[in-house]
Amino acid sequence: MGKNKSKLFRFLILILLVSFTAEMALASELLASKTVKLKCSEMTCLGCKKKITESIKTLDGIIKVKVNLDTKIVTVTYDDAKTAPDKIINAISEAGYESELVE
Image (tube, rainbow, N blue to C red; front, side, top):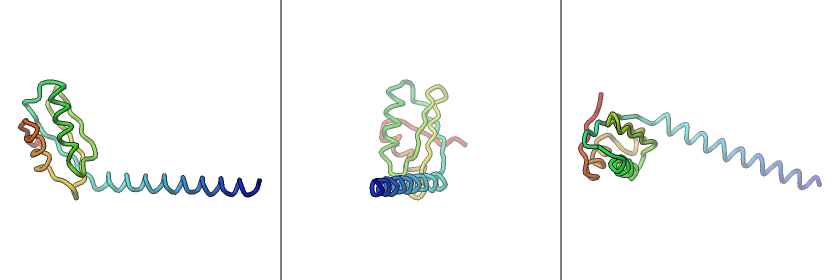
């Protein structure tokens, strides 16, 4: 019975270490992130929203995409070591929509 408790304890410690490592990676990603807001006036429907979201998510370094159809604002959180606003604007353009930075 002692061996089983020891194995279980080691397994639990391993799970905690893996979980901690994943949390630290996420935290460092969020610390290195930036957020940009883009106005996409041509966006009119849920299909547009989906197409724009999917085009942005193809870029490396995208953390979060939020599209507000009412305000026509696309908010993108990204790792600035992997992508940049011009690349995000390009991805939206390749999806068939024009966009511009909102200050």
